[in-house]
Image (cartoon, rainbow over all chains, first blue to last red; front, side):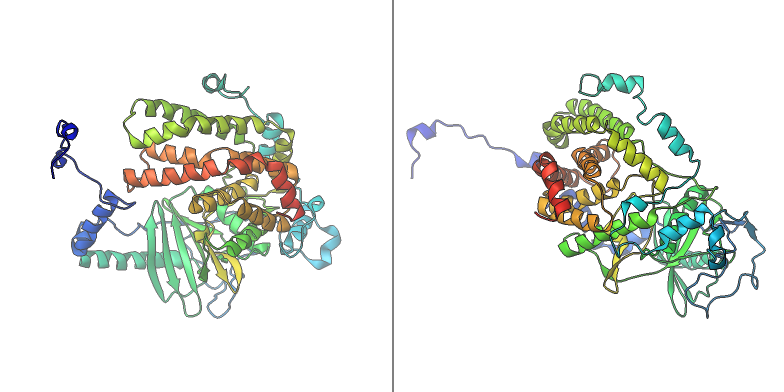
Length: 171
Length: 355
């Protein structure tokens, strides 16, 4: 079969493929090739592995937010449990007890602090019924976050950033 | 390190861990290192009756105390979460050297999948439970709080400015395939980002922010289904790595974006089903949902992917993987547009229970 005259005149360029490197097919591309190389010699992989177990310090320990209410009394099982008073570790540095509300006592219900009342309100397992938004607990604490937010709910952008933003619809 | 040396170092490590465990009222029968990466390590502790996880983190003790206090608060409020085990003296966590430790029950059940619609609805209901149970948290005095509440504008501005800067970088490298794809979409994403930033300037956001701060509510921060399991036919939180004081919308936005990114397309019907499931447990007002819509309008995933690429944050990712993930994010963000434009209709359907 002979080519038509008009096609004979065409110069079809030939690309030298040796000059290029092609990514292996598939979404992982070169990553897959590297991965396959690793798994062909797992022993070598282990030998060149730089992983070492995490360091575990052997120095003085500090227990954080220590509370007598929690001390040894919260494990959901008893046979493994040893009371704190039997086996206090001398190396443990005890921090001052936190000021969380303690377990409420039915006898002292009338003298409950606002924090205890709050705990009562939030104690019910959520999800069983639609919560009443009107009863949302409000913390009466002097939180600097709240004070800061009330003073300046939307602080202005830094000068360099404001310049960047100008003209893009943000005031 | 050869195999023998490696085995010895692991054995020594397990012996070292027993010093940490001596502060807890458990009798370990075996200790096994499960994972160690990014300054976080985890050991499985087997006892005669139950198994526990000991987690070590290279983190400021005050910050860990904030997370452990939140964990304790949730479990005291009845959220289905792995029980945090206090030390013998009632400490929530244990600090030694540069590390802090927490011990909690090991809980394994049926894995939760991003592709199971029924499970996704249950997850959203659980998220509502989580937000409800988080209310009333008073962090200890020694805790270092982390908060994003009241900082949304600042965060948006920062991300937009970074996007503008990355655009300049991309223009200098026009032959780069990632940069070409980025430049083809960045203007539309910037436009959406600035629109979202303007929408934040609303009294409803200020009101919700104050309400959240006063209620003591917090978010999961890095919401992933990898920390969830199905135990006795109910959703269960296996672990709590991080929390932050923020509007509940943040968790919703993160989860919705994550689910839709896995699907490579925005599924409006699924999004409404998921939000309705959340609303039945922890209802939000239409104004609060509008703020969620604004946060969904902001191109968080687009910014995140571009940030990773230009700062080379994923050493194990090749160019192909970057491109594949970036295309997925763009496809998801583009297909989200009709959902964003019909916010009022969708919010109405969501609250009324119709589709």
